[in-house]
Length: 306
Image 1 (cartoon, one colour):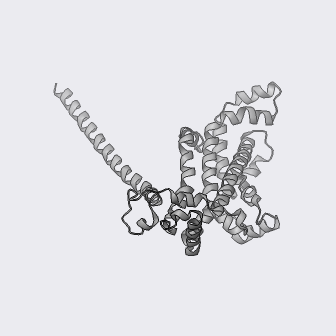
Image 2 (cartoon, rainbow, N blue to C red):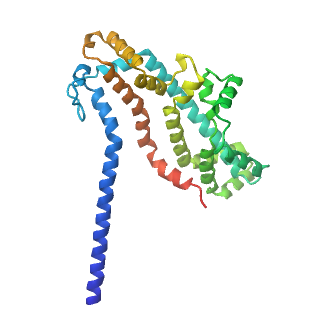
Image 3 (cartoon, rainbow, N blue to C red):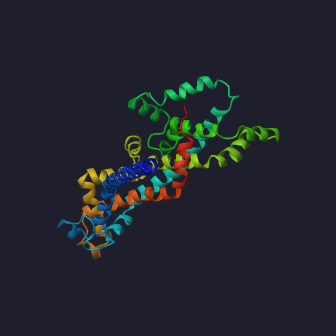
């Protein structure tokens, strides 16, 4: 009886310790979640508030005077719409080409009959740690006639060594008997890749696609360095100018008052700037729920194993 009582006491102590540990984790995670979510929520609250009322301060958690005029001003600005169009097109084309080309390279690396594979892999790994530098890269972009061209967003990002490692690690886990049986039935490498490997690799491809979309959407450096025309300006570069250049934000506010004359008295550059930030961030955030079920599976199964 004493032994049973001792075991029960130890179990209760263990449960209490686990419960305390869990509650500490919950508390820490709630703090981290608040720190990460509140800046976006602050922008949303300010963007839904009237501009002149926002200047009084005190809008931290909830709009004091509701209005959608700030978002109307954003979507009526031609520069913003053009930047959105370029960014969406860049994300769609860049993601499809990058995932496809990287997956093809990963499949080729996994094939045992690939010639000179021992030479390819070190060169691919080398690109992950070393580069020629910004100036040689800029000269290369100019020599390839990619400067101030939409293709400067697509061609340099068609392959990623890091993503290739994740995809090829996932593909190595696929059954080799399926590929051999397909070859016995007369299927070629392209047919095996497109009709067998790609459908079976949906989790890791969805994960890589999510990484690539976020990278393309948040990128502004390539637009700032390798383009000069306003027609090729991405939304992130436009947002950077709005945040850092007071003249751009003032011009955005002035254009908004012209576009919505009946609400010109309530519009200010500050609230239009906040609305621009929200509109820029929400599209990427809305993608995560649709790809979340692939995310964990793709990363864990595609991780490099020792």
